Structure formats: structure tokens, C-alpha cells
Length: 210
Image 1 (cartoon, rainbow, N blue to C red):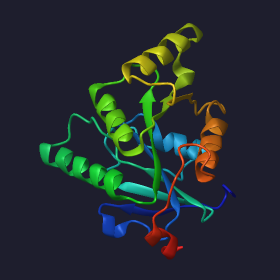
Image 2: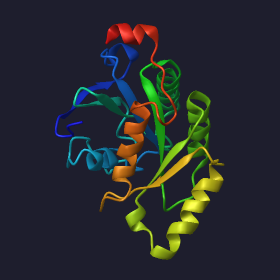
Image 3: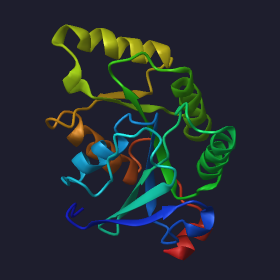
């Protein structure tokens, strides 16, 4: 894939706005301010394709990034932002569940957690959702550069145990300050595209779209 050929196709607030190309989609979920936008920019060697905000809860849309007309990277709206109203939280939940349950092009949802902290109750809930819809769990531990060397292994172990990860699950340490995790994530995406990791079966309708 030519990573230079990457564009934000749409910031969707309803399924009617989702791309209709039939391309495989790889979605990223996580708490507000966990670093999803920064990670996407790092993966694509860009500084500001994905808008990074210091304000938690800023992203309330589902953002679809077209990568060389081969795949979409999908930035899901962050969860766990305390200042959102009950109505906003309910809207977020419906949007997320509709996408995870009904989006046939979705190959895998990948969970991002902050490596500095124990996964929250919301992180555990999202991990359970991912297992329900995908069977397997891929977790990216962000902000690894902010850990001291002696904290790395204990913190990764804490994430693994808190999310009750198993032998078929994958935990990837990731840093935007260097290339840690970047090539691992791309390798996983390429393997999933090829059906070598968590095999993907497109629907008959989707094949017709392509």
C-alpha cells in the first residue's frame, strides 16, 4: 500500500454516511484522549491527517481514512468522557453498537489503552464487545514512551490480566515518539487482509459491490 495516498473520506454520524466501496475496515476504539488520532498519524507518517485534540471527547463522529483505495482505518469516537450528557452517552453507545454489529466490511476492532494506567471499567466493557463481535482481542498499549523502563513489564502484565487476555489475543506496545509498535500493527493488518490472522469472510453482497 502507498501510505502517501491516504485521505479522510468522511466523518460520519449515521450509517447512511459510511463509505460504500466495500473495502475492508480496521477500526480503533479507546477512551477519550487515549491517543487514537496520534497513532493513526504515526501509522501513516503524517502530522495532522487525523486531528489531535487536547480536549477529551472531541471526536464524536466515526472517521473513515481511505488508505490507497485498499483499506479503511476507522477512528471510533472515544468513550468515558465524564462531561458528556446522558443523551450524548446513549447516542455514542447506539452508534458504536450499530457499527460493530452491522458493518460487514469491518474486519477487526482494535482496542487502545493507556499503558500508564490500569484499564478502566469502560475498557473492560469495550474488550467484551470486541470479543463478542470478533472472537479475538487485539490491544495496543499507547504512550509507552511515558513509562520508565522498570514500569514497562509490570504495566503490560496489568493490562493483560485486567482485560483477561488469552493465548489467542495480542498486546502491542506502541509509542508515537519512535517506531515502537508501528510495523507490528501494519504487519497484523496485512495478515488480516490476507486471511492469515483472524480470517475474514466478506459477504456475497459485499463481493458484488466490489
